[in-house]
Amino acid sequence: MLKNVSSPVPAVLRLAFPESKIFVAIPALNEGATIGSVVLKARQYANEVIVVDDGSTDDTAKTAAMAGAHVIQHTRNLGKGLAIRSAWLYARDHAPEIFVLLDGDHQHDPKDIPRLVEPILEGVADVVLGVRWGKTSRMPIYRRIGKRALDYATAAGAKNGLLTDSQCGFRVFSPRALAAIEPTDNGLSIESQMLLEAQEWNLRIQEVNIEARYDLDGSTLPPGKHGTHVLVRLITLVSEKRPLFFFGLGGAVLLTVAILLGFVVVDRFYATRQLAVGYTFIVAMSAIVGIISVFIGIVLNAMKKMVAGGSKTLGDRR
Ligand SMILES: Nc1nc2c(ncn2[C@@H]2O[C@H](COP(=O)(O)OP(=O)(O)O)[C@@H](O)[C@H]2O)c(=O)[nH]1
Ligand SMILES: [Mg+2]
Image (cartoon, rainbow, N blue to C red):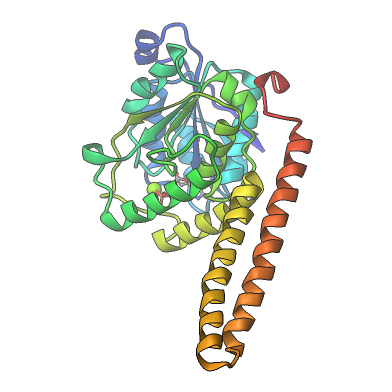
């Protein structure tokens, strides 16, 4: 399943990071048109470039190998998440000091690698997240809106708040992060899942602005479908990671509706001496479901705490 093409340490890397062992991993699905140049550019900053070809029907694997990448090939399409997982497990086996992830469609520019790597080399971050935002990005407005919605949805599942670009695939990880984070989601929600894990493990996350291109946009999925897929998965993730927040908030909303409509029912009853049956039914249902939801939140939260045995510490994984 694995094809190895050894790559010499290029001169730029030796000059920029003489001491460091840097791996760059690129998940790729049908990126034959761009993968060659992305690999060649990335090799300038890495000891090894890994391309995970995920059942592409074009020449992605061949082109990546010719450009000098170590190619991990899935025989069928398993999704971006599992492609990242394959690269992650390979990296764990080879213990790089820096592990970089970036996209294979040339939306990210490997020349940004040194700036993203810096906080990790300086020992001030475990995860460095590329930010396609403000002047550095020409992201179309519809993408910005969708991306922001997913940033907030991701933050709902996180204990340390909002990140500027939770969906950016250009990221750098320290050995601590490589050991702690367990990428398991099999689709495009992988970006959020990894960040939620990083926050659960109290890893230090830094954000660095990057260049991002949209003129050659060849997204695997249409943005609407991509966003919906991630959002649906995020709802499940938030309910798993923060059950008290998720079910408690849902329950509180329903109980508020029940109380407000309850006033309407009482008011109508005093005015007409007749029970508004429809409203009464909604009040009863909202109250019952609301109470059950809060109860589920409390029970799941207690179970989560028991299973986790308190807060996660990195000692568990290292
Ligand atoms: N291995 C693998 N890579 C994928 C898959 N889907 C997308 N990618 C890669 O993930 C990166 C980002 O995907 P893309 O569709 O451009 O996402 P977008 O830019 O957010 O719309 C690209 O390098 C794709 O080739 C997949 O199913 N498997
Ligand atoms: Mg893209």
